[in-house]
Image (cartoon, rainbow, N blue to C red):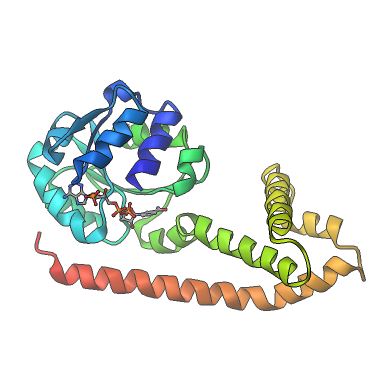
Length: 260
Ligand SMILES: NC(=O)c1ccc[n+]([C@@H]2O[C@H](COP(=O)([O-])OP(=O)(O)OC[C@H]3O[C@@H](n4cnc5c(N)ncnc54)[C@H](OP(=O)(O)O)[C@@H]3O)[C@@H](O)[C@H]2O)c1
């Protein structure tokens, strides 16, 4: 995720390579990223990065997060820590790293300059810091502010979203394959159609209007829509029940280990 986020911010011009410092446990990974963006500096220590920065993005896994936050806590209140993790409450994050913290749930599609960045600020983040973060993220994505208690559901829509949508498209194409279309052609048909439909909807056309323009009364599309309208609400509720249960399980496990 750190790679997608940094690439998105650099590619969009939100940050310049000369003002970007990175660290990673395995240094080689950071060094090969820096080769892609001449000017980016690699440090061996997370603390050194935090000490030299106005804002630092922490993109380690949940089980590594608190260790890294403790490590950078001596950087002090001068640094705005942006944590890419929804599991730990902001109040705990701020207590552990003793500085202003925001939560960010980006999308891997950010490296293409698209997708949503979900943001929630902790109580000690100043207005100027929050605006500066939102402005930078806004150059590479659509920024949506979310109250912390809605972050899990929003994450399912935007951050899990690309994978869920990819699977939906795959299954649509595979149905075409099972009914006689060549796999490569079926995928191209679905991919292009998805992009066309997304552009129509993004230009302001409503779902109802697009459905109505395609599905004439008593026609063929209507038969397909009848199936989807009957089955998909249950399917998506099942998807969200499972993902939300997993969010809760991860949070519960983590909170047991927390000793700020
Ligand atoms: N929003 C999204 O779409 C999305 C997608 C994926 C992940 N995420 C979130 O992003 C976070 C990271 O997940 P990921 O999939 O990117 O994990 P990952 O591929 O394992 O990357 C974690 C990185 O952190 C480095 N690291 C671990 N401990 C470290 C330490 N103490 N100091 C410095 N670097 C350290 C690892 O270094 P090594 O190279 O040594 O392993 C690795 O490069 C998680 O919270 C995850 O939930 C979000």
